[in-house]
Amino acid sequence: ETGVTQTPRHLVMGMTNKKSLKCEQHLGHNAMYWYKQSAKKPLELMFVYNFKEQTENNSVPSRFSPECPNSSHLFLHLHTLQPEDSALYLCASSQAHSQEGAQYFGPGTRLLVL
Amino acid sequence: LAKTTQPISMDSYEGQEVNITCSHNNIATNDYITWYQQFPSQGPRFIIQGYKTKVTNEVASLFIPADRKSSTLSLPRVSLSDTAVYYCLVGDENQGGKLIFGQGTELSVKP
Image 1: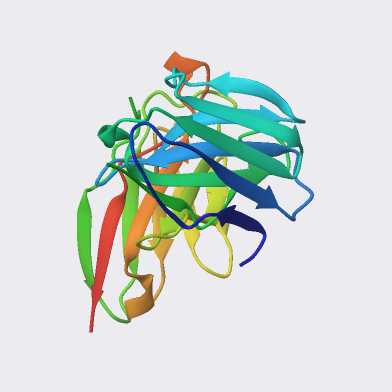
Image 2 (image 1 turned 135 degrees about the vertical axis):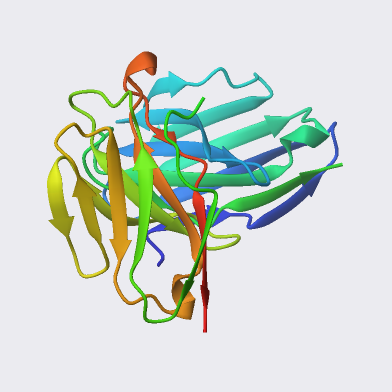
């Protein structure tokens, strides 16, 4: 499925680096999400954007900075990360920020912080 | 904290029906129950969603009792390719109905 794409698929960065993750959805959806999935743990919702406006920030450290320039694109800017931030970062989109209806996930970016 | 409880793992054989139950005692009145499937190193994929009673699609069935405090995902005649982690997703009344994934059930289908 190519409805939600994420780049890069893999990323290795040092703790002093600055990098960005990109997500793009081609489904005409209005809500986009960032999730973090650490090994052997459930998905953790990080941010929610609805019609380009951030509606949820689940106590995410400020070293993660999201950006949503339009309803189709979502970025996650990373700086001064810690090794415990290594995880799979998943982007998702849905028609609206509602519990009704499916969220469509991208393939994820596997991040390793050294 | 996730407010759903699922078995951590289940084993099955090809051709069998598999039923995975999720407990969600704090489900809010307006919450839907949604199940996702996830293969290693991939994003979750939507399977089915329901509010009450029974929902069926080409992939699975979802059974929800009247009190809605649990739900059961039923996969008919599983195959090896159904080996995956299955997540139950509901809101959490104690956190404003926020969507929270359960810990997932790792289903292993054997030949």
